Every structure is written in C-alpha cells, then in structure tokens.
Image 1 (tube, one colour):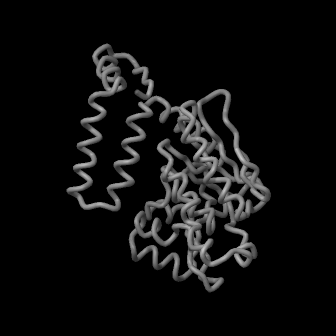
Image 2 (tube, helix red, strand yellow; image 1 turned 90 degrees about the vertical axis):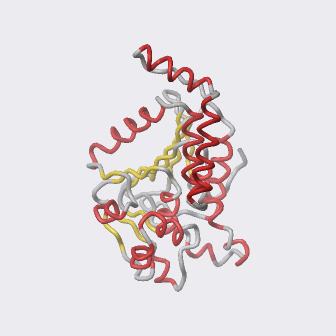
Length: 259
C-alpha cells in the first residue's frame, strides 16, 4: 500500500484470526488528519481484495476514540476537495465485510462520522458522542448530518447537530447510535466475542445481507423487497447454503467457505 505521510492510522492484520485492526494512533485525542482519511479509504480497498480478512475492527489508541479532525488542516484544502470528504469516511460502509467500531471517551466530529459508517458500535459508559462543527461556523461534512438522521431520526439529529450537543453513551444508545454499552473492563472481551460470533457465519451471506440493508435505505419498500428476493434466490445456489442445511440436519456447526 502507498505511504500516507501524516496519517495516524495503524493497520494490523491479525495472525490468530482473519481480522484487520485499524487504530487511530495519536493519543491522547487521536486527531484525524487529511492523510488519515485517504489512508482509511485505501486500507479498506486493500481489505476488500483480501479473502483472508473476514472482519474489521476500528479503534482509538488510549482513552479516547477521537476528538475529531485537524481543523487547521481544512484551511489548506480547496472547497472542491472538502466537498468530497464523506467518500473516504464512508469506506467502512462500502466494505462488504462486517466492521466494528470500538469506542471510548471522546467520539467527536469525523471520529463519530467514521464510527457511524461502521456496522456495529461498541462503547463504554464514559463514551461521549458529538458533532461540534456548529461551534466553528460549519456543519458536519463527512456524513454526520445524514447518518445521525437515518439512525436516530430527524428531530434528534437537529437537536444534536444544530445545538452542538454532547450526547452521553446511555442517551446515544437509546437513540440507536450505539449497538451496545459495555463496562470498560469488559470491552475487549466483548469485542472479540462479537468478532468470533461474526466469523461463524457465511461470508457470502454476510456480504449480501449488508448490501441489502444498506442499499434498501435509499430505495422504496418494493425495490428493497425485490433486491432482497434476488439475493435470497442467489444464495439458494451457494455452497454455503447447502452446507448450512446439511449441518442443520446433522446437528453440527457449519463449515462455511464463502462460495
């Protein structure tokens, strides 16, 4: 992969599991630079091409996930470039593999926008979510206005974004912005329990399930049902489905291969 000078992203491909761990590695606040955004997108492109990677984890080094982006760096970029920032941050959403965000402490600005593009968000009780751009005379520009509204509803999105409110973990969970809140001393165990759970399923079924869910958000119910039906029919022809049926009949765990 190309070098991304100024990126704070550390990429690890685990040897014990088919898992990629992406760490925002500039504690204490893990400020996301412009090169980090480019690095994130390129890393997910690499992961997409690797059948040996089944699940992705994104985390922050230290007590905070991220306090947000490099504000001063925006002044060095053109308005045209900044208008496309959401594309890089959406890389976890585009990825066909499950992506888990491991959150703690400050999860602000682009840090939250990265987390919202993931499939699952595990957080500690001290996690705080915010899109504070209004304090700078700006709005969230990497998907924040769109994903908060879709996950939490328009009214809550306005309450959060237009008032630059900090949302504590419990409230964020009640809004649907977090998958689960886990005590800090149990978060690591919960994370890997979820990873191992996801690894038990067919990668092909996971890919199509994620695609059906994501794409139906932009479509009518009729179109979504048509998409779901086509994918269901396709999976009927897969080796994994045949293996799943045999395993069910034999009362044993299935051995999925992604075909």
